[in-house]
Image (tube, rainbow, N blue to C red; front, top):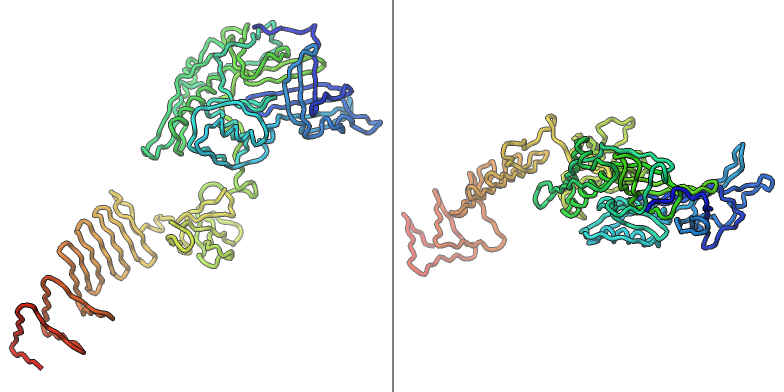
Length: 576
């Protein structure tokens, strides 16, 4: 359906309503601009003649019609055959009175979705599709939402991001675009193979144009990947060639041959195969839709819509053909309505085009990046009573005060956890919460040639352990396997699966050994058994032998008996 090249016999008409009522006819509209672009918040910019120096007033600016928060609707058309093209809220007024020229009022109106952009939020969804999460966000602002996606995510996490940025990015990452309109927000997948809604022909319906064919971002293939903990390997997804209908006689594959680009983005987190597939497909789709980009200017028309496909003609073999409309800008000035049609997409995703992440340290203080080396100053007397450790940054500061760091602890909690604070003067590794230099966390100590490890690395990596400053050691040896607990004074407990023994010993020669044959207790000195209660010795046979003498006595009574024969033998036997 060719677009009419001109509407010279038609009168451009505009109807502006404020809170449901038409604005007074005395408001002299000088110009109007309405912008609607995928992934951007729609807006309208109105300029009125306003201001009277004699009366010292700006009556239009002072009226309720454009008071901030007023709901503004704009209809455009010809000869009063109009269609609603924009609906939003008045957000900004600006008056100007140039030195030479008439005074004016600028009114900025934005789609209600602007509220989604000016605050950061953190949320978690479980077992939800991206579209359902986005619908939930829009509903929080009373904004309608139309769109769907198939795959349910086990978990979606929004962390200190605006609802708008989160919505746009999640839509893009599943190959869909977010668009604001009079009815709310719409999430849709671009369809470049759709039947063109209009034909735009150079020399007839195109007033001006600025189009670019760019092969730089075109890729023959895209391989995305994320770490799979279950497989302990990278899980990948590859996009197909991804050719889409577009302007010109060079498709994406042909342009990719010129660029030679083969992106392989990777993520360290665990993503399921469905999300990887969406990622690869969306990345290729954006690149293909970025092959031809630019702007064409035509006569204003409400038959053009963002998301449509238009047919470009008269531009030669490189630019003729179907083109995806990613944005529209309606402009009315001096009674002439022009429409600027944005063709194609930027190959970069929303997060690559805009800084959407929260500032480090919440912007409260200049941040500190990465991990830092520290030197332990002291491990007690935390002035806040928070069990922190005083450290100094290895990169010298111009003051002498240390900073207090919270030490990490395995299983740390109330009255529990592994406590191994580094000693004063030792080197340590520091991280910083939210990159705030006031909130260090002591991650652990560090070894080096100046502070050698007590268990240096070796082939097989069999030794693991814990060694205190005084030399007390707990060592695991996986080559046995075995476990040895010993002090600097050679007091040892050794458990060995290889020998099948448990041995407790000291440097004095005292030793207790457990093995498959029993228990052996030996000493180079005395062995004393002392109990406040009874001492019982019970066995199949009990043998007691003294190399010099033996004494068995009972202070109150003594009883020696046997159910069988009893032998008492000696060179001399004294009874009584």
